[in-house]
Image 1 (cartoon, helix red, strand yellow):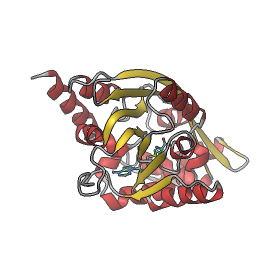
Image 2 (image 1 turned 180 degrees about the vertical axis):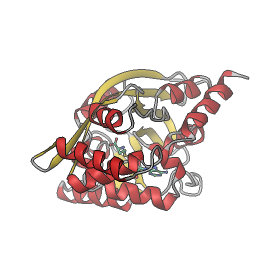
Image 3 (image 1 turned 45 degrees about the vertical axis):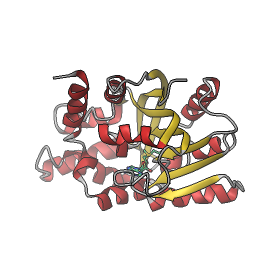
Image 4 (image 1 turned 180 degrees about the horizontal axis):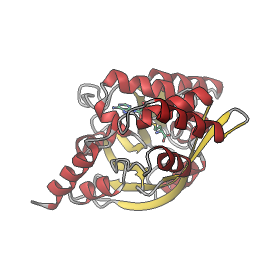
Length: 281
Ligand SMILES: C[S@@+](CC[C@H](N)C(=O)[O-])C[C@H]1O[C@@H](n2cnc3c(N)ncnc32)[C@H](O)[C@@H]1O
C-alpha cells in the first residue's frame, strides 16, 4: 500500500468511532447550535493571537488578502483577520454560531466580513464561485474537515496559502479521567481523529510541503448539576447499564466536585497548526 493511501485509510479508520460521525447532519448542527451558547468563554483565545502573528510574519496574510475561514464558529478568526486582511468570508453551517458572529460584526461596525451559511461536505465550490477564490483559507478545530476528502478540498478553494489547526492528540481532562476511574474503573480512550498527524501526512504524501508549529490551548467547560449529571450519563451509557448504582455514583461524583453550583472541567491541550502553500512561491 502506498503512503498516501495508508494515511488516508488510517484517518478514516480512527474516525469510524467518532461520535459526530455517527450523527445525521441535522443532529450535528443541533449540537453546534447548543455549543454556540457558551462557545465564546470555552476555548482559550490566546491561541488566536499566536497563530495570526505567525501567519502575518510568514507572509501568508496581509492587507490585500481575501480569506476564507472554514467552520468559523462565533468568529475566533474572522474578527481579528478582518482588521488585517482585505475581506473575510466566514463559513459555517450552524445558525447558532453564525448568529453570535453576526452580533459581533454589528457591535464592532465591521464591514469586510461576509457570512456564508453552508455545509462544507456538499458545498460545490465552482457553483458557489469559491473555486480558487481565496488568497488564504484557514480551518480551525473543524470536525467537518476531520477526513481526507474535506481536508484536500481546502486546496481547491485557495490559490495561495492554507492553514489547518487541530490537536496534538495528547490532551488531558483530569476531571473526566477521574470520573471514568470511579464510575467505570478505567479511563475511556477517545478517538484520535483530531490528531494533527493525519492531515499532516495526507498533505505531505499529496506532494504539498506542510510546516507545523504547536500552540497551547485549554478548554473550560462549566455545567450546573443537572447538565453535568446528564453529560456523564451520556458518556457512560454505551459502556455500562445506567442502573441505580451507576446513577448514584454519577450523582455523587458531580456533587463531590461541584463548587458554587459549577461543575468545572479543564481540558489541557496543545494545538498543532499546519501551514502550506498550494502553489510554489
Ligand atoms: C469547534 S468549532 C471551531 C470554531 C472556530 N473555528 C475556532 O477555532 O474556535 C467547529 C465549527 O465548525 C462548524 N462545522 C462543523 N462541520 C461543518 C461543516 N461540515 N460545514 C460547515 N461548518 C461546519 C461547526 O458548526 C462549528 O461552528
